[in-house]
Structures are given as structure tokens and as C-alpha cells.
Image 1 (cartoon, rainbow, N blue to C red):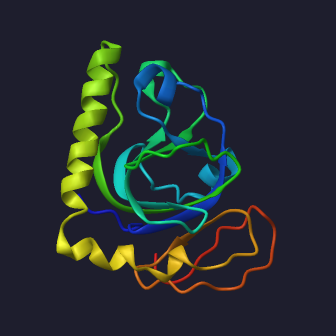
Image 2 (cartoon, rainbow, N blue to C red):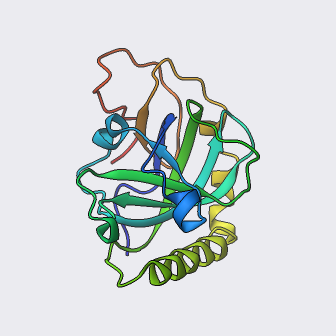
Image 3 (cartoon, helix red, strand yellow):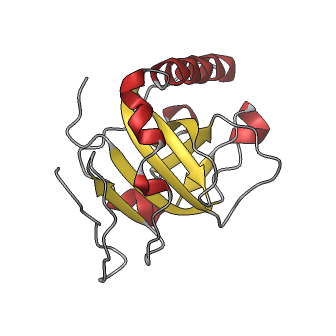
Length: 180
């Protein structure tokens, strides 16, 4: 399935989520704020995506990401939860998380048990691992996005030829660079 908004470059500060990724699922997530979620294009379907992530301009890692309401938990607000395929020693709340959504795995769905949810997440992780090893995605590992400096605390860019730009305006502006 192709989406006209992919790849999607997103950045923002890591905030506390619902507190169940590490504790309940054993699958820690880095969460971005509602303000970042509000910047996403309206045609970003709720579901599971794969891509790459970096914390505070550190190394680039594979990631799997959920955008939506997490039906199993009956969330009342939309969330953006990134599971980085790397084991970090410490939490990194307040750090700048940069992510590139590259591909779509599946839509959101409900599960009959916590074990079923965990099994599906592990399957999503396996799919992301495999897809992100494909040569077509190598260019994203060296994207100038990872080292770019931004005046803003959050933003979204659409382009597979990412070039950082200076932007001044309200915090609610969607940062656009390139094609839709």
C-alpha cells in the first residue's frame, strides 16, 4: 500500500506516555506530544509504520511506530508511540526525537488479550527489521535530517529530498519542504 505522504520526517521532544510500553508490554516507547500529532497530515491513517529514529542526533536506529488510539486500551486521545529497536540504558524524556516514517505495516486493530497484542507487536518489529534491511532504504540512514538544526521544538516535513529550511511562524504551522 502506497501513501503519498511517505516518507514523513517528524521531530519533537519526548514526553511521558501512558506508562505501559515498558512496564506492561516489555516494549518501551518514546512518545511525542499531541502538538506534534496535530502537525501530521490528515491522511496519515491510524496504524503501524516502520522507519528510522534518532535521539539527540545520536545513532540512527530502526523503529516501529503506532499512530492512533490503541483500541485494546480504549484511548481517548490519539498517540504517536515509537519503539526504537535499540536498548537504551536510561529514559530520555525531554530529548529531541527525530523519526522518518518510511513504510506502512498494518491498520490499528483490537486484540482479545494482552498476549495477542504483544505477539502482534513482535511480528510488527520483525517486519520492520526485514524491510529496513532492503537496499532501497539505505539512503534514509544518511539523510541530512539527522544532523539538521531547527529553531522549532517540533515539526513535520514531506520530502524524499529533505533539505532543512529556516521557518518562522506559530508553533502550530506545519513545516513543509518539498512535495506532498
